[in-house]
Image 1 (spheres, rainbow, N blue to C red):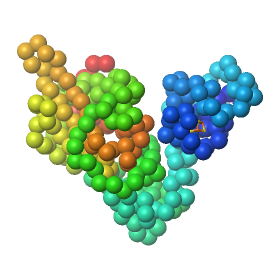
Image 2: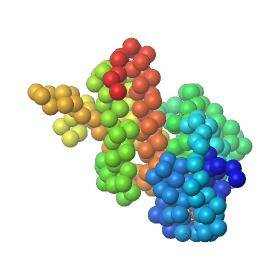
Image 3: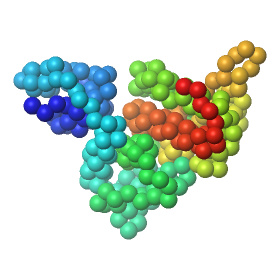
Image 4: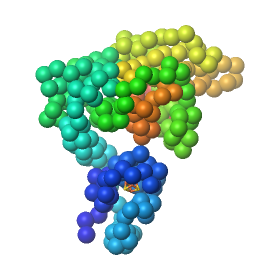
Length: 271
Ligand code: SF4
């Protein structure tokens, strides 16, 4: 029996009905949680006992993160191309022409055509492409609420807050501590916008990963014995456009981008 080595191997065992009886939004989200060790296969109540027995005690021999991302990307692309891209483009605030859906990712054009081919002026990076394709599949086209909220206060955010803080906010803070000019770079490179200071932060900056998924970054400099701090805030209605897993993926992608920019400037980042 082949080991369960990837998210897609796990997904193949599920019935793909996205029934949510496991409290995940989709079977793919459940498979990803099992792959990461956060959930157990037996938590899908629709799996036959025979399947559970067959895989009981199976050591998951993981593929590399890149290999897993490739498989998730291929799966998402196969779902996206079954959608009406013209409708999807409207939902996400993009455009549709010549059989291509185009939207601004961090202010730069990014397209997918009806065959699943991707086009972009920026480097096509799976850390951004995976949340983008999920966004196309999730967005209901509604307008943002225009009110910022931390991840923990989103409907499904509470259980992800700890991981989000460890894997996204803390690493972003370390980069900002080592290279505070990063905020100016983000304005230039990613069409960010400095905004009125929120929550008494020293720096508040809005990025637009996707048109209907704005992101507020607040940074507090160290002050009189107090450590610096950094938090991300999302639009109150963001889950109508991207699942909580997608937001986590986006945060992880931001960490990669921050680190690349800082390294280019020779900033030493303590881990
Ligand atoms: S309970 Fe099983 S079939 Fe239903 S969404 Fe979760 S993983 Fe998919």
